[in-house]
Image (tube, rainbow over all chains, first blue to last red):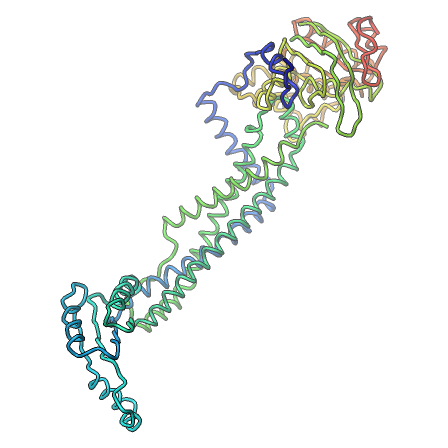
Amino acid sequence: MAQKPNQRGATRESIKATKHNWPTRTTFSPNKYFRQHQATLAESFMRLISYPLASVMTVMVIAIALSLPGGLYVLLKNVQSVTDQWEQQSVITLYLFPNMEDTQALALSHRLSAQDDIASVEYISKEEGLRYFEQSSGYEQIMSALPENPLPIVLRVIPKQAVDITTLSSLQALRDTLAAEKEVDHAELDAQWLQRLANILSFGQRFVYALSVLLVVAVLLIVGNTIRMAVESRRDEVLVMKLVGATDAYIRRPFLYMGFWFGVLGGFFASLCILLLSWWVSAPAERLIDLYQSGFDLQSFNADEIVLCLTISAFVGVFGAWIAVNRHIANIELQ
Amino acid sequence: MEIEFQRVGKKYESGQEALSQVSFHLRQGEMAFLTGHSGAGKSTLMKLMMMIERQTSGQILVDGVDLRTLSRRAVPHHRRRVGVVFQNHQLLLDRSVFHNVALPLQVSGADPAQIAKRVRAALDKVGLLDKEKYNPMALSGGEQQRVGIARAVVNKPQLLLADEPTGNLDPKLSAEIMNLFQEFNRVGVTVLVASHDLALVARMRHRVLTLNQGRMVNDGGFG
């Protein structure tokens, strides 16, 4: 039977005939592994220092790219913690259908005030509503010219929860269930300013996320490009190492560590930038807060966030280096 | 190490045929020269043995193993068993002689004490023990070539390949280099030296393989 050769041209027969027991990987020894990694970590840092200007520039570009979303994040965090403290009595106004009878409306009012999450219900009849309207609007004549009272019965529902950023969504849910009552034409939660604020905040959040993603990608490209140039400048070394039997993993390692250092140092200086920036704006910001007499402490980048920033930037550094190196090393062979 | 070429051909993607139907058998512990004009395919043949290139036809058996059966991952391990010396010695100028010679050992993860011992032994063999701290640039051409040889043998390879190792050297230095190869051969290393210095090759009285336009035209004799 004809043998089908594999991509290198070996047939099953030839593979079987020449079954070898050569080592295709060195035996693993944790000691050796640890020693090699430690040496490479130190060596790659020394290399970074040996090109101070280029390294500093790359690190600073990464730091700036990361401090922008980091700074916005701190700003957002402060705005959120300010708004968390603002609250007001919440009111859900129910406008009943115009054809509702007083008895039906009263029954609804009683039923609602018995509900757990509702503190009280204020009943405003059509006549009361008309009186309020005439007093406040100055349209007495127009109203008296109308054949009948056009105003609906209104129930002012006071929920137990006060409205603030955190309770807004549950109050909105309550408004929706109340709106679903068959007597209710329309329900309104009187927290428009808070809703707007919540919308602005969630817009801000998304903006910061999108910006972060973009800038992290930028860092990836910066690291990738720097590492690509580093590989190129060490082409001879890579070539010789390959000739004397270095595995791709061995050749890749110092470059991955280089990416790691770029990431960690970039993240470190980004954190430093954010801390300095927070400190710089803290004095005017505190004066501003004092004007509103709220007992609120300005927040900066805390330890957890610094660790997170370093972790992300280190990971991005290694990943960027990986992409650049993998593509490049395979192409370097003796010509 | 035993090498066997069976009707090996190498055709580059450009259509150029560097080798065709090359067959020869290099026995364990044998020493041979590979001659031919430049462009005859000497370097290509060496690259096939190093697995820098793959042949496009035929079989290469190394200790009975078909090189085509080796995966990409196995290539570095194959190269650790082969020492190579080049005309343009490929030394790294950013490190000392010692660290150049140590490279093959570092790459295979040897332990540092072992590395120092074996690097010094290799340098001693090529007579450069006192120059270990020098930068290769500070050495003469012949010395640089000997550093290259020390690097090629430090790993105790079973096969030593040399591509025009005496290309830039005067006859006296060339003879010294060749004698070094002979010494390694005497301790059992298979040696193949590519050279176009026919007079030198003839004096060495070893088997001579001659390539002409990619074909093996002579196998045996003393050139």
